Amino acid sequence: MMSHVASPVSESRVEKSMPKPRVLWIDGVGGFAMCDGNEVSLGQSFPGNAVDLAIRGDLSRRALIFRRHGEDHLIQPLQTVRLNGKVLERAAILSDGAVMTIGDRIELKYVRPTRLSGTARLELLGHHRWQPYLTAPLLLGESCILGPEPNSHIVCPDWTQRLVLFRHQGEWMCRTSGTDPITVGGSEVSAPFPLVPGQRIRSDEFSMTLE
Image (cartoon, rainbow, N blue to C red; front, side, top):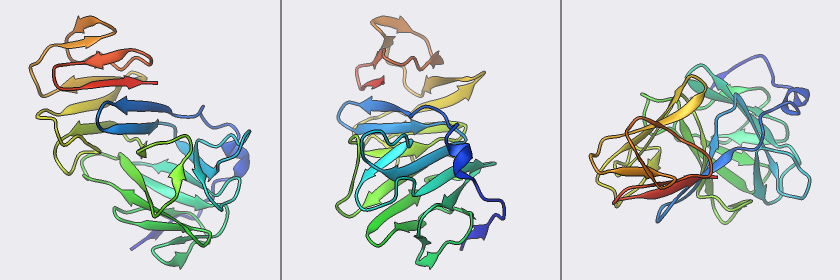
């Protein structure tokens, strides 16, 4: 079931969007674009196309926009987009499991593992790929869960603990359910600690970097 929102998102507003999202690389798990802006644009991958997320495939320069709407996300089509098989003519709220078809062939699934967080994962279906390569982008709410449980935003099957990323005073922080020592940039830290781009975060169980 989809809910429509009458006010559209104009392309002129997209031109002023946040810089391209950083990517969280987790050893043995993958790379995840951390989309924390209020608006996230998606379009075709080619040099000079300044969209936040790019797909290698047959779609428009700007195909659609995702926008934070309270604790939810809405989708605003800029080309022909079907949501669960129905052509979108205006912005609509996304629900967990919704499938977006962009043009004729590109399918994208919206996955919101838990209602306790506004964060959602975008999964490409079929043979299409993100450019640059990603496991998945994340449309971030106020928190993001990494762990072995299937309701984690990033499922890390070999972990025994859970990491929670959360917004605090304009930056992203990290806390853990484990007790193992954690180093950031080679120095031991206590949780919660800031998620600093370019610094390696390590414990006996995991290693990751925000680039």
